[in-house]
Length: 294
Image (cartoon, rainbow, N blue to C red; front, side, top):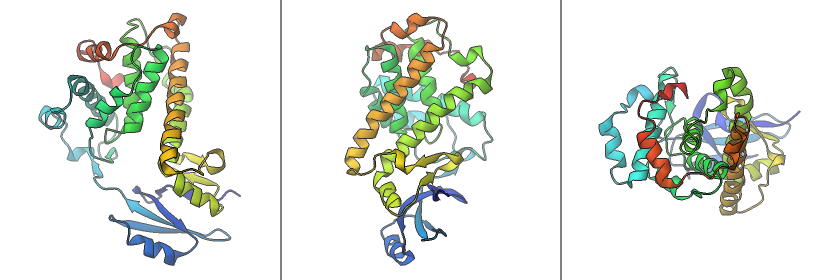
């Protein structure tokens, strides 16, 4: 039977895996290195494994935050115009995601970091192939993780807007099928994206778990990461760059899959937008858009 440990504490998902050991005493000494709150779990394998979990700060309900123009303008005033426009649309998308859920269950896991939105825009190969531009934009927004939640959902919406900015007749494939069909083919891309970004941030921790004969790390929502399937034996800086490349290609593949599912095959051959054209579309082309439908 596979030896499975949780990445997020099963009773408190704001706590994530920090250290592992076969010795609880070792983790007690490690606890002194952790600034935030901690929790322990001992996994009763034939040779027990103990995990120290660290609590994330800034966890709050969406009902505790008022997303209004004053709140947003204070946070994006120092950004260039491109970052401001993109941040404004991303927050609109976040609000739509909040409205689609029970506010008490939809949590904000981190601070809003709008400067990372500008960083994401600056690392896109604007003007190259459409799938490359759209995929890189999606990947960068996910990796920078600028929003307090819903980063995958909002990044996919931005991929859609990127395609629309050069192909006005484009319709996201889900408009042609029911939601169940949409989820069936999109969810695996989202799940694999979450696997990649989790390994990227934790290769050293996961290498230690593999050395303790752990087979699988399970994230919240039941997403399982089979440690044998990933290269973990590298410096953490190398892991950051290696898995950026893998994640970017994964998102480009997703963009290609999206384009291939449309009725117009020529979409796949179009060049992507310039940054200016994309930002212009965000600012003027989405004025009456109902983001709750995305």
